[in-house]
Length: 114
Length: 115
Image 1 (cartoon, chains in turn orange, red):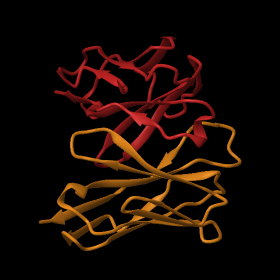
Image 2 (spheres, each protein chain N blue to C red; image 1 turned 180 degrees about the horizontal axis):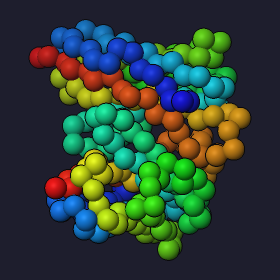
Image 3 (cartoon, one colour; image 1 turned 60 degrees about the vertical axis):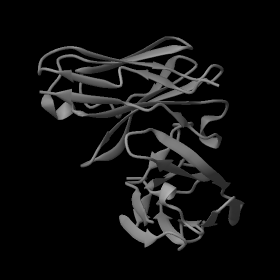
Image 4 (cartoon, chains in turn brown, yellow; image 1 turned 45 degrees about the vertical axis):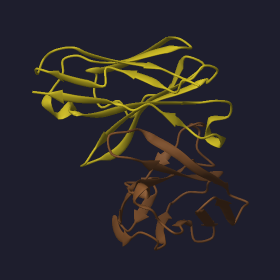
């Protein structure tokens, strides 16, 4: 499977702490994306990092990408209860013939306690 | 701006019945994706379209599943006949341009229960 794999499967922290989630994938990619899914809702795009980028920031989010290790991490700083959600990484396939599709991992369930 | 709109939000029906899920993508988006999400299998891509043409339907589980996109603003996913193992949340998503380089915008899904 080309799917990304997130680690850990579940993470439980207190408000104010940082949360780090990791993603590993198998193929060469053009970009990697992170999404959030609140309970009962659809996925929401958070950030896209291209294969020639190593780090990207958006507000309290910091994403890193190491293409040599085929891995990425998502850091949420100063977490809030509202950050409670599932987080997914998604990759394309640089050499794939099916342009446009993304391969999603199984997600990390983050719980932030007040 | 209106996002991706899916209907119905919830569907409960008996085994053997036909089920039709509907999706309206964001205006101007030329890629449309249908996904299925379950606890056991996670998020699976069923089929996707580019400019209303199916590009990859290898994720469609069986001939009981079919999808159409008659125009740029509407798509359907049909299951006939439905079975209890089809119970899942079905998502539609869309994006624009070179799809792999753009975020996908998801609807809030249809929660399908087959009794």
